[in-house]
Length: 196
Image 1: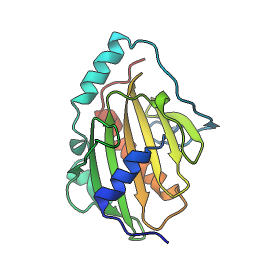
Image 2: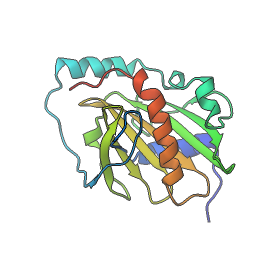
Image 3: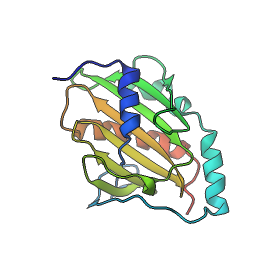
Image 4: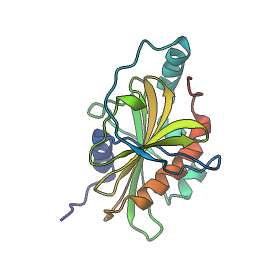
């Protein structure tokens, strides 16, 4: 039996488990899962100056400003985003919102800035990672066994932005992944360019 959680607790739970997410896209702007792969943790070589610049630029991004009030309306958001505690998640900063799904279930979604953690540093928990792109940016997706979905957008070798979504009462992550994809398409152009 599922216990009801407040939005902050639910988002923190998502952030702590912070699964990996990605998409591949036959069309620009459409985040569509690509082939699955098994992910392992990896250490990256010293970041290039482009990567170091992307990482420091990303650290300055405020996640609550990445979605406008007009953006939030499409997710039936209930007020502005709230800065989240990042002590447990390891994120540099995080912002969470509460909203409603198409069939009026509660939705918790958040954006986590990870200026010191790259997409390749994550390991899947409870699912297979799908690699791909969002608007030509490297991305990863993991639909969790409990119905949540996390979409990760690469900024540098050691930095990324996570979009985590949970739809209340859902075990099938399809709707959560669609919402994460929609959010990714909104915020991706606002992020620092991906370091290559």
